[in-house]
Image (cartoon, rainbow, N blue to C red; front, side):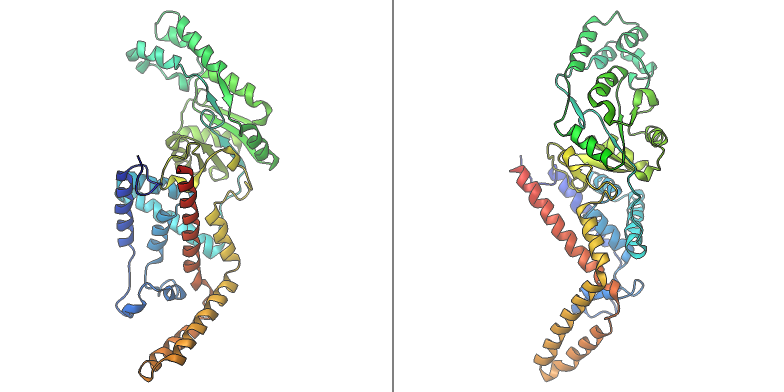
Length: 400
């Protein structure tokens, strides 16, 4: 089945996006009483100071953060809003915090922390199981009440036979054979080893952070060997993703602040939402190119797209925005001069009845020549639209 927009999973998701977009747009306050109607919404408002602009900057930044959520936290918030089809006050407060951070990054040059560690999920990200038999789940189904009274094998170091004994079940000969078959078919994705080497070559600590039972750890270590600096498994940690405790234990082992960790994984709730809620950054592995509006902004199709320039760990739009900020004075002067030329042309061709208004517009524009910050919103919006259009084209190409 195909939908009107290839980045929406379902028509309901698209409807949710439209409802949230309208809600967020309605929260942008406009001071239009003293602004000529034909100038409302024009780029000249960006030449005004923050307090004098015709629309509220904070709410406008929040709206833009939702429309182009290249920040992992913005992507998580936008995804939750779209799925709910509404804007809760809690999520909106978080979105405003993202908006404040985006604006501060421009005003004060505050960037994201350096990446000191990258943690990879294991199954579905670095490795896959060729033949899944689910032996632990099979035991749990046989003694569900007893299993509910015991800690999960995912949060305690226990083997299959001992877990069967704890469940007061017979010796699990069939399940042990299933487990052996599963372990024997664990294989690396083709891009795994090169990616781990590339990350380590940049002086960044490599970790594997995974929800798994104890028997799966040994084959994983055998496959990845000395390319991993820190192993963090749920059965050792006593907590599972997306719990805060899991991520707190991970950053403690790594000796880094949460904001210095990049989590890479294929499970949105465990690897992305969990990491972001713990204060870290995240990148979503979307090997199948599944449609997703917000998620696509922090998605990669494979590990080969992870690990380049990790000291920056920035998206395309972030890099473009940095380029705009670095050259803002020149870009503003260029735009200012172009507008001056356009307005001079209008004055020269204006009728006597319109000449006074045209000259006033020219004089008003002349007074903006030193307002360098003014052009930024327009330039960033134009760049965002271009990047989004390219992303849409790539998504469309992948879906063909």
